Length: 98
Figure 1 (cartoon, rainbow, N blue to C red):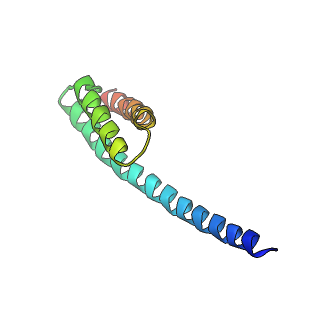
Figure 2 (tube, one colour):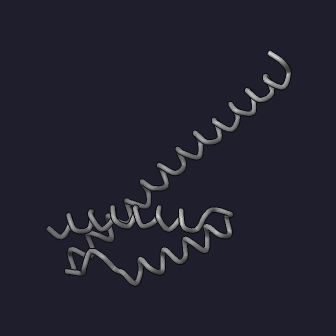
């Protein structure tokens, strides 16, 4: 292998190791987030509150889009991601209500 190909392979390996670490952080962070949202779901069920809170969801999407802009991440991608997470949370909340 040439020096440039060897260097590229090393850089690729380093980037992939970083991606793997970040993926692990994302998974553990999502798990922690869902622990809290499940607790919220239990509270909502105990107090007969609706599973969805559109005002809160809208605020959170706006907040996440602002954070995404600060982080140089596409805010629309961030909104789509949070909408997906919110839909999963609402499903869990509805299950607690049953």
